[in-house]
Length: 420
Image 1 (cartoon, rainbow, N blue to C red):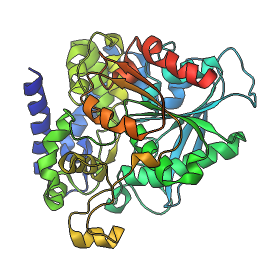
Image 2: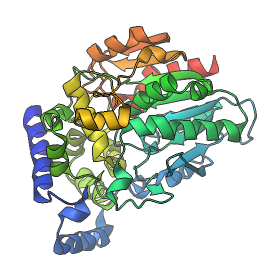
Image 3: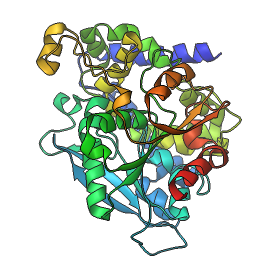
């Protein structure tokens, strides 16, 4: 059953790509006809009969303020011109003073995610709210290209050039810009960095390659850490054969953006998930990362679907597919010795060395994680300065942000590290 669902989703993705070989982005806007969009607009306007969760239609700021928390938005420009959004929860609901001694905590989302990764569970189960109420100054990052960080000083998101990035650039530019801004704004010298999934990947790179940024990290807390993905069981593996030929991959999926129109996701969340079954929608999400219905609050599935996935670049997905083929944690492969020589002054992509990450690392991992496979995490751990390592054997990838028992099994460990 799982295999059939996987094949179906991948085939649909490939079919859509083949239908628009040369367009700039893989979006529902570009795939659907004018009549289809008109029908969807009519459906969205006529959905007053649905008793949907109001959080389906909220953005990050609205999610936060609806719970009684303060919220601030900042926009930080990277050295290469991308304008990224950072959302701040400066304090919790009970203590409404901004104190200088509050621990400053950065939360960084995963692949095709956004800051809402940490905001869509009930208030007592979402990491951002738990940290704020515990006394932390919480900052939620948004990587370039996602729904909240789709701006640039001189490039237009409609242009292919805007989307020429992968997690390499997120680590090289986004993380330093964010960390330095937060340190300057708060006046603290060191912050806690909590990364989930790709948020850990760009942390490993940034803190290993940039000593100045690493000096501002008091503790790196890695949820479902991902670096080398030789053993991953995620269906991203099915894209790996295409990644051997960059031109074929880009012809299939475009040179620009991979994006599911937010209006489409809100429609699916409200109409399909709430009316016709959260299990179907949960299958759609679990197919990339692993299955664990026991820990999922099924009533929240419409909210998860409304806020996920967010947009990213085709190159980011291609970079992950390359990692499956190379079995290495390395920079983006430009496809030929000549192109790699232009970018790296060597014929092959340079490898990242986790041993260069000197900051203390707290590892929190799952035993049934399809994306951050236990074998790959076992390869990573001995190379890091690990101060604690927690394995939750039953956990898959998304449990770290959405499981109803995550506060007990995962977040309590984070609170101990930060407030010890």
